[in-house]
Length: 438
Image 1: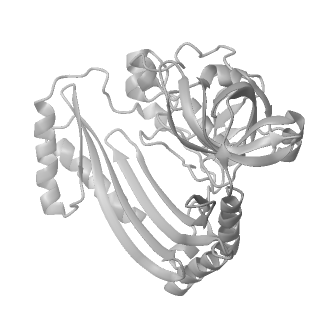
Image 2: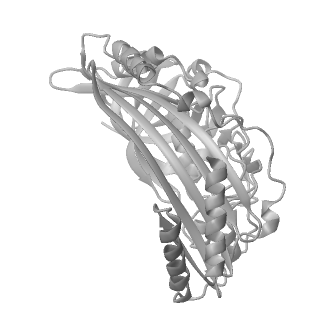
């Protein structure tokens, strides 16, 4: 399949240049997704979707445009590509928009990343239903359960890309996702709910389906009798699953586009001791079976490990070729891969014991963060930390502050990276955090 898509991409580039493009880029993708939904003991929905598409980038006489289509029939595609070149000629010139320099294609890694699992592509209906039943049975194993939904979703993707200046590459990958969500009867007419999910490239890396359901039920049960938390200033311990999302918020504006547009606080941090020495973040696209692993990015830039923050010092941000030219920054890569937060040596129990008191955050409930200033306000759900242990459940609380300041107050990092994410972050401990509640 990858050879067939590569041939389609190469032919598209030839057609674009024959139609008047100076340079051209074409990528072709085919994706299949299968999802089984199981709700309260019954199969609710089965969905099997296959999609394909082509994206082309046209560079003509100092002008640039991008076009996409799902119709890959060669005769009709030729007309589409000719029109794409004609449209490009009517646009305003943009001297910063140039095809990726060929030297950035060099030294593409050859490591076997093991992103493709043949077992995913050969799963049958019985296996998928078996997963759903196992999750459903354990997720509903309590007399307070009102409803439980379990899902088994698998996918396979093939992508091929070709450029007029020498790039040619393919990537194939699979994924498997199992998830359960549980709703319980709480006091009066209140409800308690939570869930759990796991995702991996290979079926063999997934936990047992029954464990997914059990974990979802356990997470919902500890939410029973939750009350509004207090207003206080104190220690915040963030569990690894929620920590991955917090790292995502911190790095949401760590890119050349927002820096060049004056909408990122990261621009002035490069080379500076901006965060706590406890924070080290590396972007690593070469993790075997990693959820965001790759051998090249969407511009064809060869993948390599990119240090972002080293013991609090900002070393790099994400720089694509276009905004790199506009901002005067050397390109690194335009998009993130696997973000790895260097873990510490202490367990979550040890972190909680050291904290003694404060708030243990298990999930975020909406909110926002300003990419320009770093100011944030987030809803939280979790537990009070009482005598160094997880105490009563709390909700209806907000945590507010500034992301730069917050990560200066990073006091400790756990040894428990959350494995089911492209951001491998452990539990994090912050001091002097402002909470608003009752």
